[in-house]
Image (cartoon, rainbow, N blue to C red; front, side, top):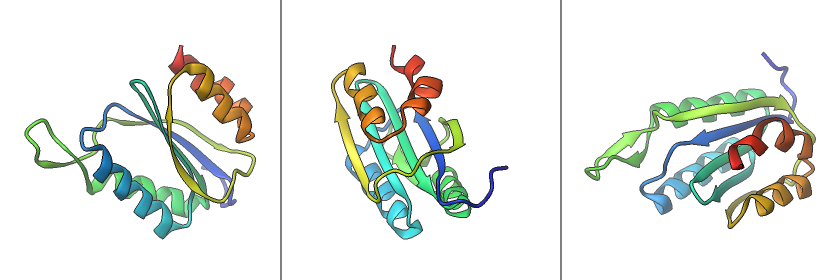
Length: 132
């Protein structure tokens, strides 16, 4: 397990988001409550959640994401996230102290986002192959 540094970084891959606005609102609320920073990234069918903060806050976020209703199923009923995958869990360089939602149109924009955030190594190691 990684130590308790403020740069504990996780990248989550989400299979789908059916109710986008409520999903983003819930994620943003949890991120704010836990003092995290990062980005919710949508690039065509690729949906990533980049989070950074204290280890215990990241673990609490992951627990909430898996155990509380966050989306709706195909019949419109509230449901828990069952198809989230942690694709990276590392100590990363610090990123800006904010949380943003990014709608990106291409793999090049996705790469540029990670490079501008100072996360080129994380992009190359974990994200690049997802966007190709």
